[in-house]
Structures are given as structure tokens and as C-alpha cells.
Amino acid sequence: MTHTPTQTPPTQTLLTVRTVQQLTQLSRTTIYRLTVSGHLHPVRIGRALRFRRDEIAALMQNGVATIADNLAS
Image 1 (cartoon, rainbow, N blue to C red):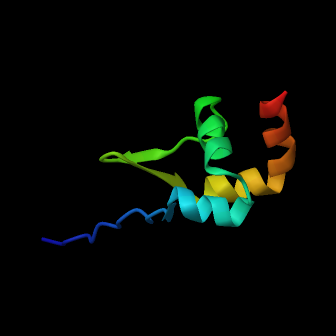
Image 2: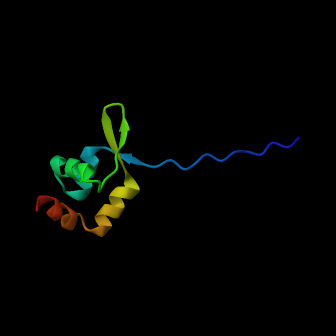
Image 3: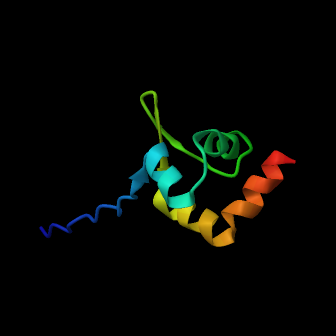
């Protein structure tokens, strides 16, 4: 009988709202607005929100300022 080891899926790095603020230079309110508008999809852990690092990186690459400006209008 052969045992095949199972692979564990890679874990995603989750960021706090404060870390997202530091990376994007956006306010807490704007981050929550991006969440409500569907631009960000946080992971809820208890009462806390966490954001996937790859999603924040994509947001920054697509232009945080452009998306944030669209929310304000």
C-alpha cells in the first residue's frame, strides 16, 4: 500500500485595514467604501476584516487614485 502525500494549498497573506491604509495611502473610510462598492472583497474573521494581499496589489496596479476618485463622484 502506497501513501501519497497530500499537498496543502498555499496560504494567502491577509492584511489588516491599517496595513491596507499604509500601502495604498487611502483613508479607512475609503477602504470601507471600496468594500461596499464591490471593488474589494474582504475576509471576515470574527468581527475583523482582512484583505488579501494579491487583491490589494491588483488594486494598486490598476490605480488606486482612479478608483477612489470614482467613489467620490
